[in-house]
Length: 132
Image 1 (tube, one colour):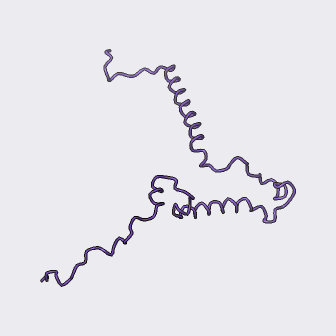
Image 2 (cartoon, rainbow, N blue to C red):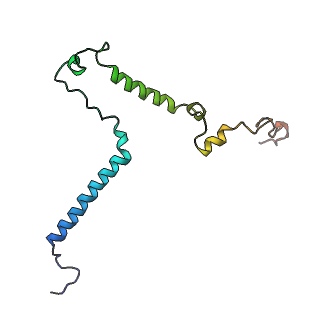
Image 3 (cartoon, rainbow, N blue to C red):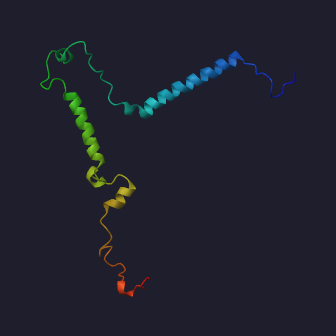
C-alpha cells in the first residue's frame, strides 16, 4: 500500500515518551516561573495557621489573647481596608513625589491664568432664525 495521506499512522512509543517528558518538563517550568512571578498573589502563607486540635491557649503558647484570638484576622482586614481606601485617593495624596511621567504633568500648577470657560462664544438667541 502506498504511503499517501489516508493511511493509518504508526505510533512510536519512544517518541511518545519523549513528547510526554517534554510536556511535563514544560509544565514544571511554568509552575516554577508562576511561583516566582505571581506567587505574591497568594498572600502571606509563610506561617501556617494553627490547627484546631486545641483551644486558643494552646495555639498561643499557654496565654489567651484578650480579643479571643482575632487580632491577626482583624489586622489583615484593616490592612485590606486601608489598601482599598488608598486606591480611591488621587496620586498627590498617595505619593509624596511624582512616580510616573504622567504624574509629573499633573503635579505642576495649572497653566491657565485667566480661567478656561468664561471666554467662550456668547450666542444671542435673538439672532437665530425662527423655525416654523
